[in-house]
Length: 343
Image (cartoon, rainbow, N blue to C red; front, side, top):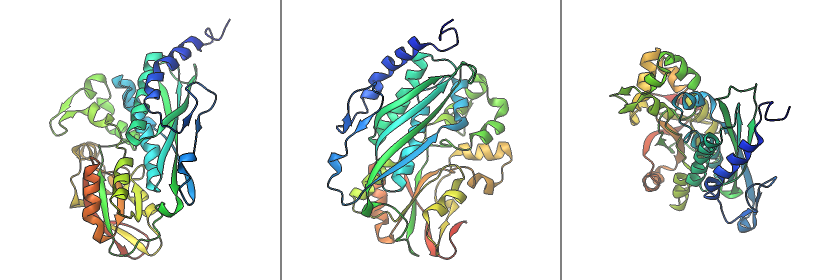
């Protein structure tokens, strides 16, 4: 009896590491210390000495049951982008620059090529936001996960000068809310998605083309989460102060928008101020989901919202467009009880 007979293939683990090295190497930053394969990842903070009060910011998250689609479609090169996005968007919401990222993959059986495919997506997400992938763990857990399934989670660390942090403290009535378009469902609410499309969750069903989507159902649902780090950096470079910021994730508008507010102000969002992607209409119609529940579960086409002074709206939107994002003026801040109103 040996470890392999117990279901853990050490050699497969070694091969996974070799296959992923090229992807990991592409994410390196000058501050990274040491190579790939050590017991820990080192990152020098010497280049940030110019900050008055450097603050480290962190975020951790996973991909959730969206992974079930990856299993069904046998498509594993985009869920890593989702994993990175869910973490670094949260760091960026506080005004942080993502520095480095670590991933954790737990699987029933280590298929080296599949693991490398997953990590290629993680590396792509890191490249999109400028973070270094400095470490990770692949845990083969036979008997805990089915052989063809895995879980994926991650952890990001970023940095900000305290004076540049986005805290919502400067919010006032008359400030404008600008939303950046999402790529679709992103990585939240997939337990409900899978319930609604239960009969379509087959290879044939997911490969079915929908005219209203302009693509197959599977590709519409698995589209990776947008990473908004560069757009927020571009807004800062344009000289605009972002007063508050919200990453629209699980809980949709009703849970996440109030998190960007301070006492005494409320957000008023105009639902008709931007186009809602057709995947949400299809989801609502097929599942008989009430509109309030849709806005309380999904991003409904807006993945990130910022609040800026009314005089900075044009510069903000131009900066976002320069970064490749589609911005919309979606509402404003008003005096009142802390909360969000959609009208």
